[in-house]
Length: 205
Ligand code: T5A
Image (cartoon, rainbow, N blue to C red; front, side, top):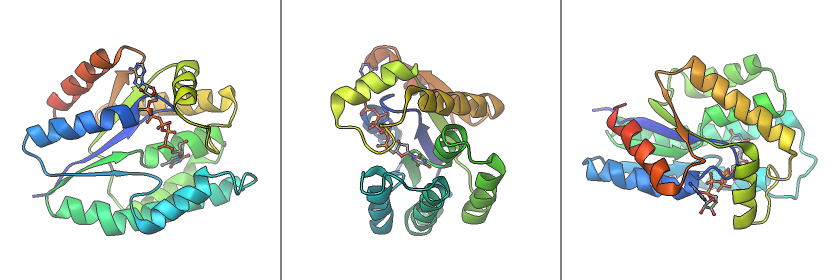
């Protein structure tokens, strides 16, 4: 049996890290074997690429370099973790995936969506998430939450307008692919957010 590929998305500080363990426990309670992973990252090479992308050592990185590094890490992740798990019948629960590339590199940086689609088709073939939970909050609230938690990474140093474009691209994609996406109002208190997540998962994949 093939496993299900579930991704969690959203702008900075929406609560992905906070909620992913909750989702993990719901899936396990439902009897699923789950591989919990993240992007960029999820493999030794991917985690090294994550450091290049999020650290401040390469603050002047070109937009195309950033895009290609995201997909380099993703190719390794698919080969070593995601495809083997799905083929073994396990669910894969991934903190961010290619929707983040459309939102950040497409919406945020302004890279042509057609270029991202070429890489998506090359690296993923036909593989797409079965379900994507988009945690949505106004940008100001997300940045405030993220700022309280840790020092800003290379992305978190971008301006408010950048994250507004990221958020709008996520929402645009969610509306265009409503079969796959569930939009969660993550501006609510945590118990209300988790009630929405529970309902979204019960709705099936
Ligand atoms: N990226 C990634 C790209 O540009 N392209 C790509 O293709 C990919 C895959 C990755 C960065 O890489 C970029 C996007 C990102 O900038 P990341 O660590 O995955 O970085 O992403 P972040 O958004 O930076 O993750 P964060 O850890 O900052 O945010 P979370 O996980 O969404 O938020 P979380 O859970 O840490 O919560 C933040 C704070 O809010 C509180 C929490 O307790 C915490 O203190 N909180 C709430 N407070 C009140 N009410 C609620 N409902 C709350 N929920 C959480």
